[in-house]
Length: 425
Image 1 (cartoon, rainbow, N blue to C red):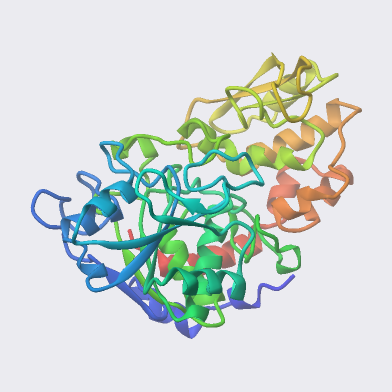
Image 2: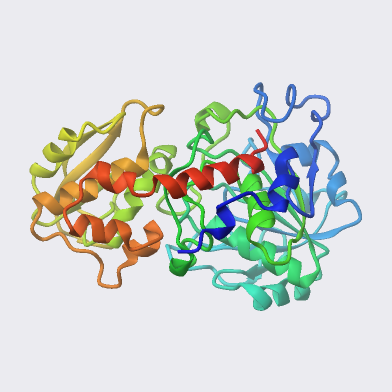
């Protein structure tokens, strides 16, 4: 495990204490133009996203810049127009390229896929596929596109293994290599930014579902993560700017934003999905269905041969803010496609008390205890999701929920100390 960079505050951490990482400028730090937010950024009132504030300022942060944007279907205005369409139609903005992440720019591909490149039929703009590209190969794409600045605007889900934040990291690294500016337009963390939860990635387990040592539920916005990446992890910091939101508080769930929810990926249909995802996505690392192929992915969990004993055992744990209901369902694709399976449905009744990571661990512990057929995926994918082999080996050794959760307390405390220096709200 390599947490040396989180063991204390780096020089760049200290520079970030005022809200900007190394090489970063905070764009729109003052209250927005007339008709906009109220008070200081993040101080409550009517929420305005980073894009809304950028537009209200006449795109001043991009003045004289040819730019491309990394985005997907979540890059919308509150009247559900896509920002690419808005920017393309505005003569003040010189948008020349679109960069699509996993699932694609228009979001049609399932997990582990992309739409490829081509021309956007709505605008005629060239679309470049960034999925599975990083380093110099991605830098070459930015160079080929002819942009001066790379802009990022994607709605995150708040979990370390949700890959858009690593698209952000890879694009920042590549922009630095290509000598491009980088501008992040902020959006809310849909499950609040109150605190970080869960284990911190051990770097020897780094993959695209976790490049660097951050907590499983990081409790940060994408702009804050960009500052953290620039200040702690990038060997060559990028020329970074952020456009903050106004009117967002760290205790706010997504619905308080007054923004429409657009699924960031095909299996993230609702805010309720995002609420549980940082815990129940761990079941991707098992032979238990995580609910893909149902209308409630990550809220429904089950397998052929599981019965009501799982829900009973899980409820006996007294997990805060949640009740587990015996449930039966037949996924239309993925694990157990076309087979009726038994399991649980997660019902969160107190969002403020709910701890998704503890809940996920409790469900793993009880699933293994009550179902003799329980197994980890043969490739030990659970280790990539949790960031080490500790969760798997402890559960195999018979550890309980409290013991497993307690095992990462020291590394989580270190991450929380570093995290504080990059919070904008």
